[in-house]
Length: 54
Image 1 (cartoon, rainbow, N blue to C red):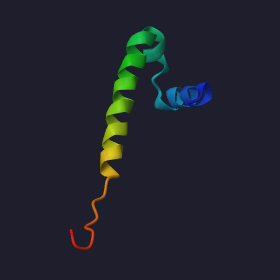
Image 2: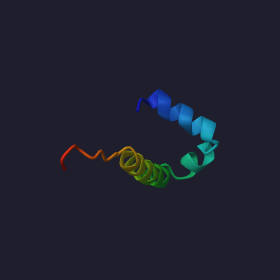
Image 3: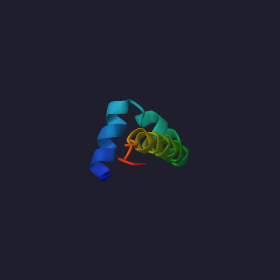
Image 4: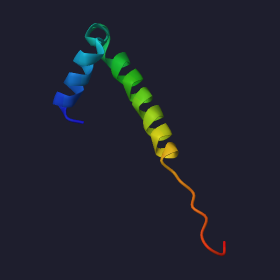
């Protein structure tokens, strides 16, 4: 993500003060959340298709 995108997300989330209070902890938590949901989205996108004869 670009810095501009990250800034926009931060502003729209209303969590700017949390970031300013402890940037390191905030970024660690955000990273964990993004990775969790990215993993879930990847799994949800998997589809199994039965092949003929198998």
